[in-house]
Length: 210
Image 1: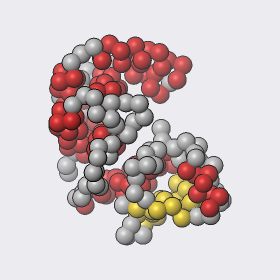
Image 2: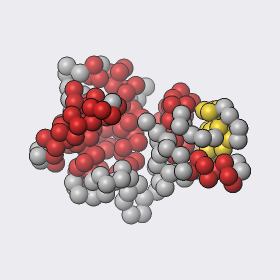
Image 3: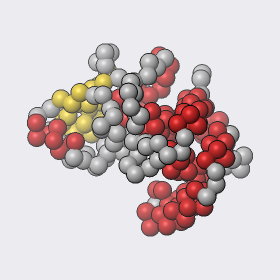
């Protein structure tokens, strides 16, 4: 089985070097360098705890500041080399679980912030992996949604109920597009939303993602 974490990590690093540090991303306010800094700190510093634990966010911000003083090329090299050896994420299975979707989403954050982008044609294995991610932890991504959420994979018409309440909205599209929408990348995700006008409006204003 191809490693989604490794392939997306390599593709993201290649694209980052091609674009340079100052190009925008879909992460609001972040340049390409800012995004690389985030990923390097996330998997290589204990200060990354502040990403998930808001009261400790100051630790993470200070780690970001230190990392930003490094050259862009050295940061990309660090990211490309994978998790540090002493990190639990250096274990291939944990790397895949923790970083497969993370690297995919952030690769698309860079791609889809550039003029003229189009969705990639993904192989069947990658499509299956992304749909498994939607079905597997999509509930966490929509935990704050004020309406029910159903993910629908097209053209297969496979569905996964992520939040079982009424009224509900169906988010339909290929796995990559549905996943990106659930991660809060609304403007860059090519999905169809089906439901009442009021329910759709509530979902589009909701906080989604982790």
